[in-house]
Image (tube, rainbow, N blue to C red):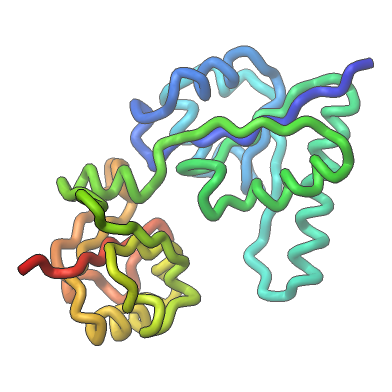
Length: 230
């Protein structure tokens, strides 16, 4: 029996209308849909995809639990368990469609599963989706980079003052859990900062200035920091 293929499929930043035609087609054509969360129907990825593809409700949904541990050994165990779950379906000749927010190539937990699947000899394909920072920039009505400006995409959780001294503009992802500290670094940088929380969703909040951004901003918050133009 031929083994199935695992697909890492981006559902975009939140607005169901931003899902790609390919993502919708793969959901319709396959029976096994994996979602990152204890209860698949309660995940944000499911909510987005179900609004675009109502047939999703009739699929077999797999729960892929990816806890946010700081313990690397615990993280590795959870990744291995996720890969094993998916491989059980692939071995039966079934494709598995793993739905993820944004794009599967940008700070996506599916990447860790992908590495394990490929190491075990399984075929994996990635299906791009609209990234959160592109969705946020569109909502804010701003460009991320123009002419010869570099664009730096950084995990805000790990930045310090040195990271913001290179020429160009910055997207700071994973900001929310350390927002107060990130804001302090940005104040010292002299950059113009705007932010988006839950971009393109019904509960979207846009922030036009650093001081507007609450220290307790939600998990799906990202910042765009740009050098001032003379």
